[in-house]
Length: 207
Image (tube, rainbow, N blue to C red; front, side, top):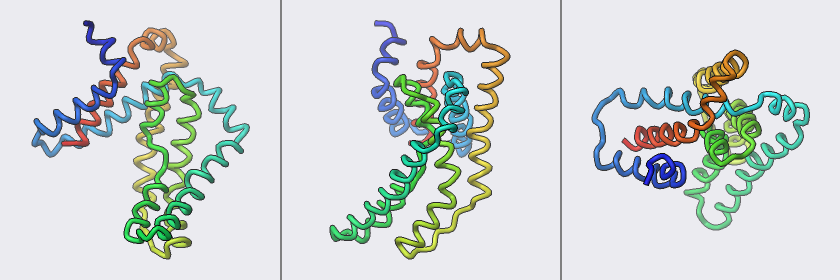
């Protein structure tokens, strides 16, 4: 049995193996968390290599579906979950559920979208836009709905977002425009590299 087809076919097993190895053989090195940012940048770079940036422009020309999705997923649903938890007699968990529902689309979602063969451009746009508005929407929602004050370091979040998103976007744009042959040659290997890098992220997080 060849290892590469097995890894690409059984992605879930690879993640579980990475988590298990992290639990059984943790690395006691304080600097291991510093690997998380480069791994995420590499993952997003691989995803953005497969993005036709003209599709992103098309999405922006017709913003209403994106705005409707953001309204439903990041404003109306969190509020609904909060009141359902309250009415169900779980006020202790209502805030936790509310906070979880308010969180933006993960920056790793374009990676999974790319691996699954979905429309990566839409996933990238949703992830970036929601990360941009969350520093404002979360404190406002908590104040209006839960009467709770939440402090968010907007500058720190903006800096991290700029590094995690802008850097791989610029690198991907450079490679797609200046080195198209390299992009084409890398296409058969991106899924395998993405799975291995995701497994690396899972390992770093668990340890």
